[in-house]
Length: 404
Image (tube, rainbow, N blue to C red):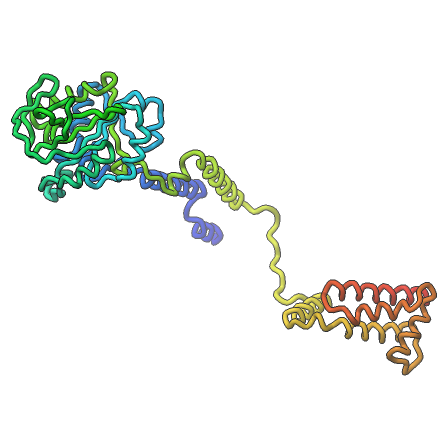
């Protein structure tokens, strides 16, 4: 009657419950690992000139505006892999440069986009996060020309104009819009969009299908708050895109989605196969460990019985003490005395006299014992000592067998 309560106390949960509990824990851990690995790719930085930013200098409004106009959201380029795809070459890539963008990424992008339609939008304003409203920002002063010219110089051999703009209206594809504050422009005799004679807001490079919008206040979120500028933004994109709706936004300059770490390498080809193999092997090892294979192995004694255990222990102690190399001569002397006693040597016979007597017992070999004794006596390592000891033992055993 007392056995059933004892069993219930030892196993409060069934095996099925434990299995599903472990399975749910592993599934939750795998989900957490995947979400933690890819979360930075889908969580854009707050504020700044990125296609995800809802601040005044961001371009989330333009992305949404194109989505409503074309019926689908424009794709996002997250790294060199996307740039190398055949589909990317048919799109107009909109590269929005922010003050904190990666210059090295811009240089790689320019090389990869050689011969492909690309619109570069220069930065203009210094901003700071608006802590009272998440995702918004406050506009500060205009960026110094030296900062903007550093970005512009990586794309074309040009610099911003120093003179202030006096034009109040800008003609964008036949639509007149108000000129933004502190308009940025470059000198160009054949501008695509002009702010007066020889002043370009939108210009094209001579040797590449690269377009540069010097003033971002025609495309950013702040500009799209005006109905005329919002319509003009679509007109400007339509002037440049190879086909209707063929617009793609760059994220590589802002460090979104292009960075690889160890976690991504483990769960993406070509290392995904290795990861799955390790997981399957671990699962098989776990399942194998659930049941015992064969009877349990009895625990051995810490100190074994018998002569062999005594010999092994003695040999181990001699080895640790470093005295094995000095046992050759002692073993040879011990075997000499034992052989003389077993073969009936005259009493009191010792040393070389005993060696000559033992040699006389061997009719098939001259000086057989003396040679073996000398080899064991002069051995100085374990290999030669072991070989010499075997030869001495075999010689004594043969002579003793012949006597019997």
